[in-house]
Length: 314
Image (tube, rainbow, N blue to C red; front, side, top):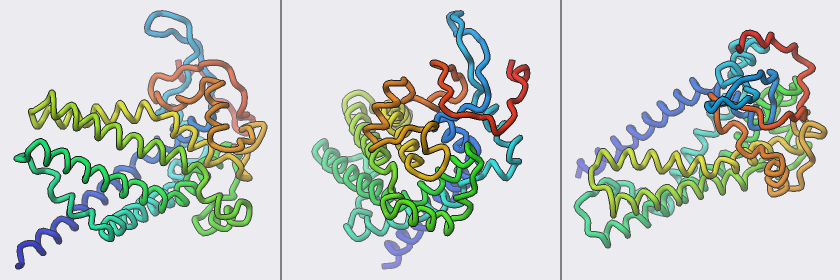
């Protein structure tokens, strides 16, 4: 009788250890996520410089993610690079707890124990695939919805860098600001495109992995590489939805980054998509190392900070 309880306890402990490690990695990489968020919002404080593409065609090169993060550090210091980290971590914990509780209530966590079974018939494999996909969708959706208010606070804390505001200084103060100015809907700004991106990525990647592994790949190690490749491909395909979500999260707030003339007054996320698509900016932040300027778009002014010498990026 002791065995099953001990196994369940060990499983829970291991899950929390892995979750803690993911939180640590997320915290360590937050400065780059911060820079990526500002890039998604269209903020380019460092002027592009002339360069050449791989084919020798003249282009305008934008600073890579390391140079961009260095710019934030020069303006706000080391600790300034971690703006928005606290609500991000709180949101991750909320997502973990809520999603697991929901899965427990629906009896879906029992499915996790059978994920590694290899001696199953084709019919059983298909049934297991559907059950696991169902569980993953429930966990993903419940976690995103529960944690989204903290995601909104985190993104807006980071977006303050653009206009140098201090409206979102703490989690409690941010909750009051959103409630007073936008009501309950403000806590879920940008939720729909984020849900669409994550759920679609989950369904597409899981289905592709199942089909490829069933008909083409039998080696266990090769299947792991295939899983990573499929997830990367699907996330890249759906990346524009994340850009729209970030912009929609800030749009309508009192931040300079979310108001005209910096950002148009979007009626909804579809309106935001159409605007970014027309300007060919749905892929903002998709490439973090090799970045080029599609066209000059002085939508966001950087007059509040001095431009560093362009020579250092040559």
